[in-house]
Length: 108
Image 1 (cartoon, rainbow, N blue to C red):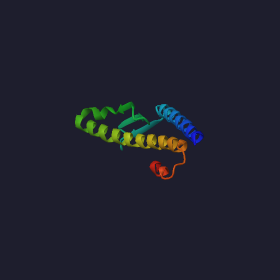
Image 2 (tube, one colour; image 1 turned 60 degrees about the vertical axis):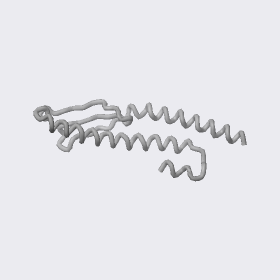
Image 3 (cartoon, rainbow, N blue to C red; image 1 turned 90 degrees about the vertical axis):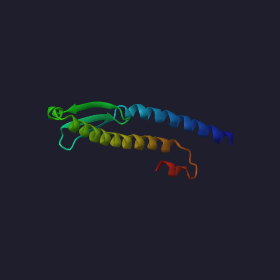
Image 4 (cartoon, rainbow, N blue to C red; image 1 turned 180 degrees about the horizontal axis):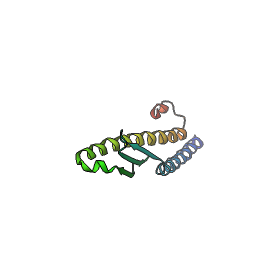
């Protein structure tokens, strides 16, 4: 019994280390998003840190339009980054979880 418990604890610690390594790796995975007409582009890491914003000069003439572009494009980039982040971390966590009945449904 204690052998199983020690094995599980070791596996959980290993999984935790893999999750941390995956989080670091996700800092280097970039999601690029553009507005429909390509006048604004955003680059964001899979950990949802904004890395770059490029704005076409024509958008600088209309503050309200620029704000709308930023909101739409950033929200779309954040949504896509969140999907990548959750998928990657769930895969690592699921891989390292001990086989406990009913737990597999938590990571679907």
